[in-house]
Image (cartoon, rainbow over all chains, first blue to last red; front, side):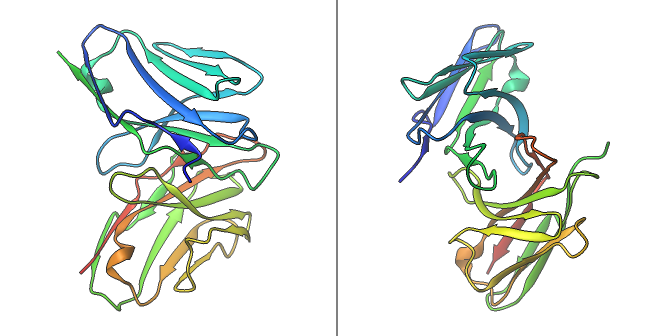
Length: 114
Length: 113
């Protein structure tokens, strides 16, 4: 029973264009969401997060959108760069619930072509 | 501010052997997590420490697994009688106080032959 789903295993985008990575969740108790980027043989690197009291958070080229009614969030990268090529993980946590462990999706592999 | 460090980065062992991994969190981070990641999956929660107290364990953490954080600083994860199914990347993450963002180390990749 996957509580966080990333239904696209891979995405290919041209350099300079927008990359949109999607994530769905099923647990309505989740109230904090994060995106991590991971290169092979390295640990996940934190990118951006959003609390459920917001619907948008922006940091440079990265913007996360949250649609609570649809239990959906997305990560927009504009403009995409070849160095953005990596696996992106969506994660969620229940702030007031358990001990704060993160629930991850299976990841989406982004390839940005020059 | 140094990041989370893990040692070793790679470990190859034979089935039935014991292995131990170490994690040094970011200084002053009182919360420490262990996760396991297998191919094609996202990281899965194993266990959580707040200071030196182990407060939560996943059902993934069988009785062959044990974790400690003796002085509330570094942590160790031991796997006894390793099995081939234990082959995975073992990740450590830390955070502080009520902060929700966790910062991950580089991981230890375990291969059980």
